[in-house]
Image (cartoon, rainbow, N blue to C red; front, top):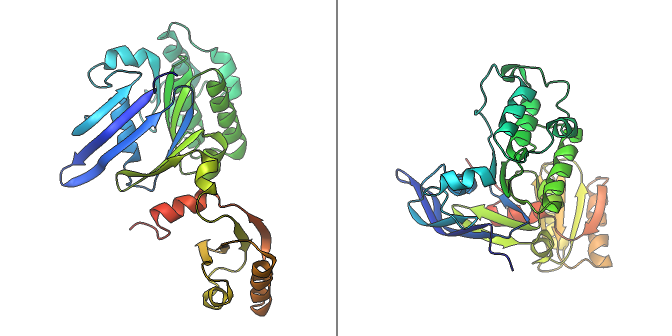
Length: 307
């Protein structure tokens, strides 16, 4: 079995009095896509930056491809791709010109023209970086991260701000990287993205790993099934909770989106639909199935937004 591409053990990182990462440990299998999830301020970006060698850990160990990313940065840089959220590009540089420059820094780069076509950068290829839209900058950053054929690539919110077509193209590219044996570590706020791409999911909250596993394992744990429906936001769920069997839960994870968790039996479905009828609610998108990754994420990190 190949050693882990990334191994973090008891990582601690502080900013003054604030502990951003508090004894975090995780492992990334070689050739896998690992998604790191967490609310804003959870410590996921700091953890990734320690792995990239941009930040020095205050305690713990970080190994990337078997090397220390700070001490061995010069040896790692040719082997690791990093997608930057902002900066790193001269404002006057033209998009494809910059991509070709980055490609020339590597011994065996990907075909630039193919990458431009794949990510839909053709029309904006001659545009200076300062004139690119947010989505175009995002696609260029992704292309620059992978053009050098890295063994390992870190992607920070790779599809943020992309339209659906561009997002699908990015997902296809990430899938192609995995098929070629590239290890991918990505952070994202899109649960659909994590479920679709990830071999392994790591959920970070308050500087610690609170859950890790395959998407299927995480969504299969706990409640066996869930009933979902949509309706007017802010419905009072007290009467529904009273009518449901003991141990069931009812919540509104997002405005107008309702979730009932518990053993799915005909009587429970009848109770929910009867409650909807009594409240004059036509339940939209009524479906029964296992919990989604978003349900798991909210249960682990809290359903109330952080201040």
